[in-house]
Image (cartoon, rainbow, N blue to C red; front, side, top):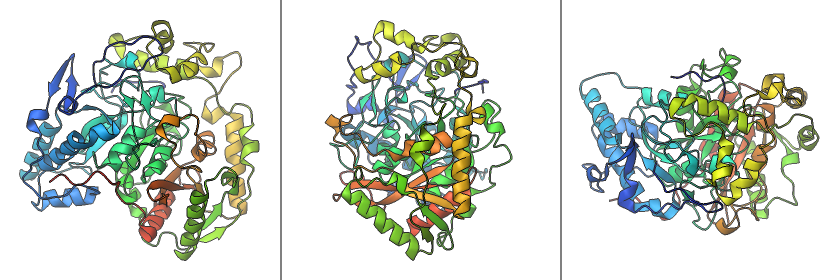
Length: 545
């Protein structure tokens, strides 16, 4: 891997200022990946007919691996079925950017290794989706921007390398909000608009909406997303998924196109708590290329799946953070689901403290809660691409019009920031997270408040409003709870499905814990998941026969 001291497809026509590059691919063209400068088709190797009746809708990592090992299916057949689902359903949601042209070749190699009795990794033959801001050496990485339409990084992001070493197969990259700017929806100038698999006229939230909608629709068993303020937990909530934002310092961001390096987190988004824990086992840990992980070097658990207990809520003491349950902003049906979730938590053995009093808004008013370091962090990232980098300064796109309308304001807000000076050395310094007095005070005050109440964790709805109509994604944006605690404090949080509003619109329960308590989060989320079983697949994406 190339060393980074900080931040961690398709070939489309350039566009004029203000417009959006529209993805015009037919379904056969979707079955493409990039190698070097050319397209390589894998569509001729993919069919809806496979040699197995193994069903992949809502399948899990454990089920896939067991079926391959007992001869029910093969790795190649599993990958073919996922590619067939993309071919059949991608036009509905526009979640996929490019396919891996060597996915079936990799599947064949894994089948051969298994037949030869060779050791298999913990993610053996897990078809995975990866957000378009993770570097992949064999597929373009655009970060949602047409300006990076030809960006083929020299190597894989840390997490991509880890999942591949563990035996996973990256079947496709997924669409995202341009430069990860929007928590509202997932619209890029490189691949256009992703829809919510549960309601095609609704947003999947942003910015990891492509991973969320793709995993929910069964295009992959699980996926990777990134979360600066909301972007794992928000889309996971909108798509009835489990998504975790880890403690800052426990996971590497190396090779992930940055939005704000002192807040960025990358990690798994899946249909079950167990699957998310299995991938987290692989991707968590120290990385010399990400200096933040030095702090968490000795804090990684040996096995996060060891925390998965069906009665994991028994004896837990949970605080209802009513500061994040504003009755005037909360949709009535989400509020009803949340109150029902509290009842479920009690019935499953938890002690619930309601309310848990803490002034979130006062903490958010502290100095230094956020600094505009996107330009600097992108400068570091672009340097890491080497001499083939498409530009040296991300703000060059303002000169040539390679951006969509909604991204312009966010780009211009960074014009006054220095290009190549670390934020801690600015005239008005913005220290990194460990030295940021305001953020550390927020963290300390919240942990002390939890200590006083003897809480294991705090709970609140992941989103207070239902997914907005896709044609009013900005105007109807409201209720995004995920931005208000975890990103500033650096604390870990997980969202788990808590039911559906208006029949089909998912909602999530968020659980927040102290730093490095990811094991506890997995235990609590697993207990809730197993006790309620809210997850169900979206309509309109049946098994391919």
